[in-house]
Image (cartoon, rainbow, N blue to C red; front, side, top):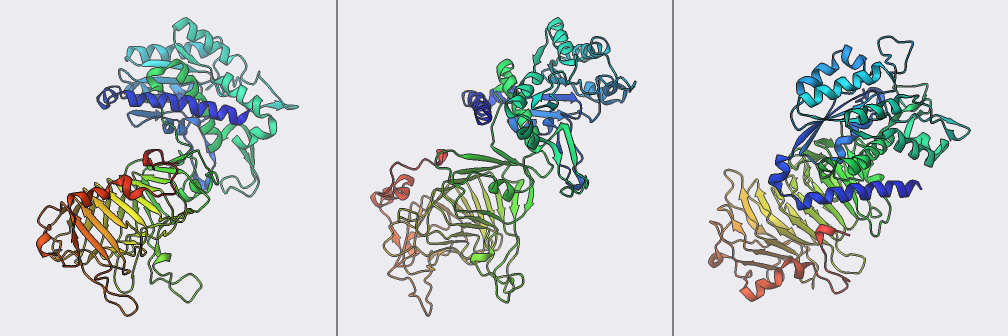
Length: 574
């Protein structure tokens, strides 16, 4: 029953979100509006100091809406319809209400406190009068009022939910909604139905049941059957959205759905990216887990292990959602007498397959120099990895496409679309197949862009298609690549090459244990343009492709393997 309810809510939200695809961006821009939330502690933002796990559902609500809808949460702990006005909160809301906005009104828990004259408002008297006042002002401002009955308390007696826990306040609100012709979302009913479906014991994990000694903010623990933790707040917000989907389609068309949200301000399910990944299902063979990462700099090392398949990790914005880890090859392992090395220097590891990373900056800020050595930002060791609109920034060895073989015995595949990649030396390197499309490749010093180590006999290595190669000021001698291993395979198709690209284009790499790559590496171009395009001066052991040869380097052909049961669709990466 529980899984069915969650699945139903997800499908409702997904269906509503799908309507966005039928709406032009101009229409979405015109339809932007603000939802103002007023209410009590079940809705309100919380002080998170000391690890306080309490969350109001209004904190989670914006995670269900696209970025054309703004949510302002004015709710306060302990407020009633009366005290929300007398303490000055309503004046701020009234000043901010605009034509086309929505006012969500949810009170009841504190209006019933007869012993407190500053808050008490009788259900069939002052409570209804106060609701009518909020409705009247909202309409005068051109906003749409919406009434929400209170969230049910988790009051069980002998495993039976006490359905009188909110007294007459839900019914009093329903009467006002009917009399004033206001949309009503019956949150009391849906939360009661949810709690009854769970029962006493199972529902505790959604509320403030805190064991002693587990949270600094409440060392003696806490048993609270009114207020929710992050899991409970997300659930209530989802139930609110399910009611919106039924009655307010103009809001529902802005729904989005994420399985997990990461936010440093406590408005998500987790504070760190790694916590979110650890919470994903193991060995998901069909379903994709969508993770939203809110803006912020996340100073952490992230590892996606091999058992976390089919993840879609989306940053709120590529410039402002940053995963930063400053490991470097020359640093010592803690408590050991040896260096971490190149492979150990990465800040973001992907050991799984069918993973999509979108709108993120992946940064290794360690710097460079003899005392630093290599400092990898992104380490890929899986198949069907898709990076879309990402910024991947480091110095030497920015991206290590480490994965050699997938489970079928073919090469691991990576796809970079509309990405910005920045580095100094060999900053795209490794044995995997990788297709870079519409990317900007930025060199920060005179050195080498790529250092492929393509295995012998592998048809494809690195392909750059419609990419733009740029450089920092003063940089004027950069090679497209050198072979880390003798059979390196790198091809540039229809790319714009800046003046920093050396006329030779490519450089051999003679070393004691490895041949130089001349005569074994496959380095080629087709349709290069810009001041760095110079086919006549390229090293003799490189290739200028014919049109027919270049046609073999489409995304579909590069990514195809004979063991595939279907063509890879990165936009449905399952």
